[in-house]
Image (cartoon, rainbow, N blue to C red; front, side):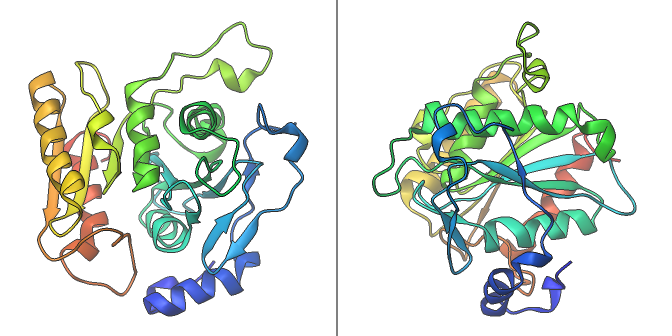
Length: 281
């Protein structure tokens, strides 16, 4: 496992690219290829620095705690404007941090709706990948030491859209499906939106999963103001929510191991929120 806590942001990106073989093995979400992508399932992904493109075989990369396992799991959906996946500061670095704090983390590689030449859509393909990831982790919860009622989803920027939509629209499982993974619920038990996009499409209603939000004061107005508005929507719906707007950052701060500002320590606030919410002891 990488010792990312010792790396500068630049070196962290370099390390995750150079030593990709040291990462846990990615697990395809569909054994025979994702629906609508079966013909391209064997097509290799392309790496651009710490970013990945050309995703046709969506997967999760598991970071399972080896000690002090809390039973909590987080599926991480990196951002990248739906044209790439920023797997460094919005993926693997954070997953390792969670793993070291007893939280199972799964970095999601989803299909990209806005990559040049893409035939995918956010709702039909990227969201199918997000829901399938939740079902997969829930199906294998016992194997990984996870409480099946403590599985959440976290998304950054474009990935934050997937997290929000997963909380808004889900199902209890499809008991008649031939695929046993589809029997599991796609509802996340909690959600975390880290500077997500298209907040004007987000809604709140009673019974939705509790919400954690982190964003920057210097982000685009539609994001910083949008998150404040979303918080109020959740409050009106009677769903617990917590909002952090950090005054000295903009978009894309993610998680970098050697940044010790207030915004850089947001994962600590997130774990405190999990504890306060009764999701983690």
